[in-house]
Image 1 (cartoon, rainbow, N blue to C red):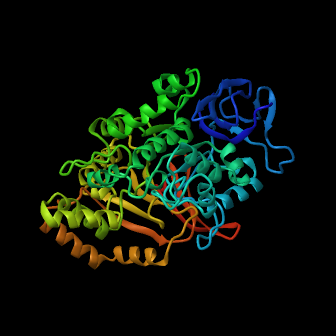
Image 2 (image 1 turned 45 degrees about the vertical axis):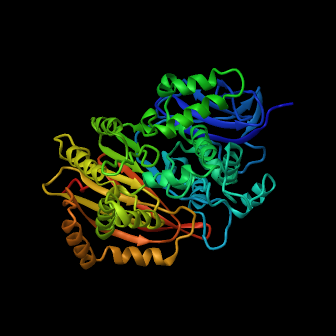
Length: 530
């Protein structure tokens, strides 16, 4: 029987002459894309392939098909959507679309899907107006909050009255979430046509994942957790991480070589890898780098790589931070720093998280109360890892101060279920303009109290009070200051960074029904005539 295409194709990494295309099939087969082939590998009885396509022309647009054992399976017969294609980078405007927090389907109270609306509009546009890249900044699936349809499916497998209830527990259930999330026809076409990079956030595993050492200790006592975290990381490696790597990185990746060269089901290999990654976050680097000509995207893992020792917390270990610092250097026009969690929050919240971090280190009841607040109030952003917040600020200031500094340094984030932009300044002039752009959610609930809470959080008198409190408890002044330039706003939205040479701008678009409406256009660079 001919193998069937279950999921994909997802166009992932695109270079000047190469590309990678990811698929999931229902059985073992050979996958062919433009004459380049790959044999599927097996994980827990599921079958996948990542085809490295060679021989593409720079600056070209090439339609492609997918064949399984020689049989054409994509595009689907009768599709009215434009042909999916691989577009290698050329001259002209570069557009990167980004956002986070997307639930599939049509649930009550969560509004229109901004990414589906974007795909619908894109299908009507000329190819010259399509984006060159898509960045999904976390919560691609909700393992702890499945949809109603997913809960019904879970109930056919096990008794949801037993822990962990209607949360996923193993690889098969994660695979179902990805299938549910990525099979909507317009989204499937979008992912087959726009090179997509991804990173996880907490809901891809569980809410508040790696908030603190206390959180990890609490979770480790739950009998279902070891399998849950292990298969969460296995599924992330299969569905998200592999496509973040370019052909040269894949060729050097020992895990990828072991899995694709394994005869039979590779689940035992990946289980061992995932257990090691969870026990020792220094054993794997989920952060990665993508270059688009003179534009660099440096994606920072702000979840799995955390150092959680009280008194010595860090978003990533020192070796990985050094890797980030080294890769921020280079002859580039624009540096994009991806972080699922915002770097710059309202000043009052930022100081509050730093105050809480210090309180968590205190012994006795005060420390326990502070830890409870850390988890209940999600006080786990960069400022709650103050050493990392300051180190990132120093890195950005150093890059922005170079004689050959990029025109812009922009931090792209999600997570917080509202949209805003802020501009950073330092104690001395720098050559680059520096911004925090936050876009969340793409499709999820954003209660009104979030917007009101964050509007109050940006209030200067409150910021002054929190600043004084922070100094009283020993939190040092930050090496960076910042001002809100737009937001906060709630509706589901996507954002685009649009770059022409040394000029850059941000465009926020909110979803209204099946349409997108421009909410803001913000310059990210100083005009040449200034």
